[in-house]
Image 1 (cartoon, rainbow, N blue to C red):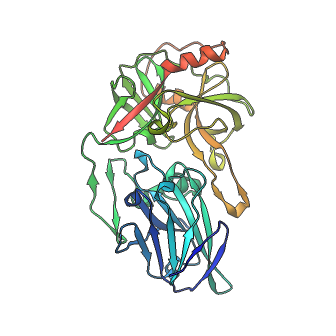
Image 2: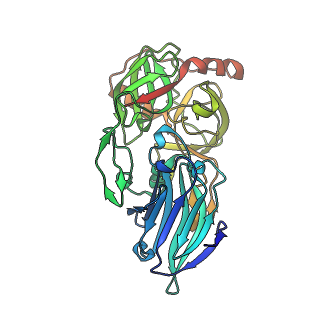
Image 3: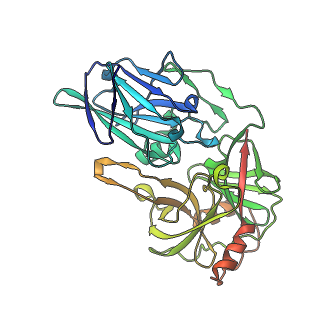
Length: 379
């Protein structure tokens, strides 16, 4: 069978009732789930094929008028990117195409958009997606996260899909590493991180020293969690009395991609690029300091080292084709005022740390080494 190279943006004409077979030929193919998503947010898992890394759709008509086909790491909490699973080939009714590999490291990749035009079926080739995986895709589109096949649940169970059927729920054995993230020391022995960092876990430890942490409170709606433990270091001052301002210089500190970049603290710089989050969310703001997977829960600071937010998520080359644009370096932070309110509601007491007025960059970063921590999450 002849193989054709599909180009990003190319539109392929396929038969309306043609079958579709997707073959994943790279490593970690067993970690990939393939799903079609309608414009209304209905997730339709494809069927497992007879060979490893093979997924099938019996007829393209099942996709309706419009749907996107995605590949994603089902267990992206343990790291990894879809890029490593290429080459990806797609067969439509007997014609095979070699699909383009994404340029960026993505844990969820939109490989194609299927739609109807003038009574015929068309497929637009794509290679865009989300560094933070399928949940970032769902949240960006305002789709239900609970509808995602293979998503890890808050109770630590993971739904597996085989042949389009819901498989048996399985729980990871105790002690199984689930992932890592960042946290911020905000009071003696008190660490704030994202709720999604600890989601599904029951055992939490500091990356340095491996001291145990216990969960005091979690707020999934605002993506915040409070942990407590024997944490050495100086709490960061919370700048909750002065609002952030558009264009303000900020630093982001955390532990991204520890398996690739090492377990030492990473600091990047940028500015506040928007005073609201996705779709006008007033609890969040936008910033441009580069971050990566594992930065979640880390600190966003003003030029003096005062905490103004908690790193939450990123919109990496988001699929905004309907608006005719591609976004770059759009990151979201949770405003520190919510951290202050959650600490008060959880009964966390402590002497307020005076705001810093020292903007010497070297001493500022030195203080962060004791105040921003890595968190290891296990089942």
